[in-house]
Image (cartoon, rainbow, N blue to C red):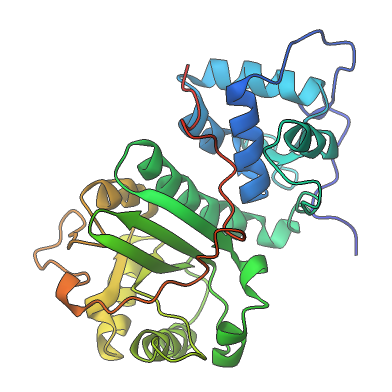
Length: 304
């Protein structure tokens, strides 16, 4: 089968090789590093992470595209939707030359097929929220790994569940490993229940060598009704105490307010649900300092 997206010959996706725009400053390197980490990001996601305005984001991404450091893609054939960006091989080479990646770094990820692109972007919304919380000093994002990086983990293969993502975060209170599932409302409740039952076993038996510890489970929902269903299912399988289900636009607030160290109640909820800190028994997963990938510099990215 062919690739997910074939770039049509339209100006917003084409590189202008005659551009004289200068690139390679600290913010460019931070942006390219994060794009390598995430594999793909949309224009709005890049804007929130790196730029003070949409106009500035568009200008800078145009410069990076013209210099061949990134590639721009449509979301299927949807001209009205924002561009999606991936790192170009030249961008990877620049990161290696700048010491941001080792020479053995894998090639940039391929763009997912159109049928999987919406879910991939939804997972990157969660990534952007965690990275934003890091930038704002609410936590330290030690690692964030996506589904394709977790497929080979023996514990998840043995449990027959592959998370959409896994975040390893630290604050003064300690470390947390957060399993992440992004729900777009397409899976039937029976499938969701079976998945949550598997997650409960992962949490309960996390101290064994065969299964990694997951401190908390984050579920993002496509609607308020779906969020309520996820919470109900988590409660039915005995996982409610360690599960936070919310709409994606509430995640930044939850992280700013201390989740997963403290309780967080999304708007309109009378009952506060979340993880009790006294319940946590934590053994870090994926904390090898030689493996964990944090391409950002010590000071993080610029915002101007």
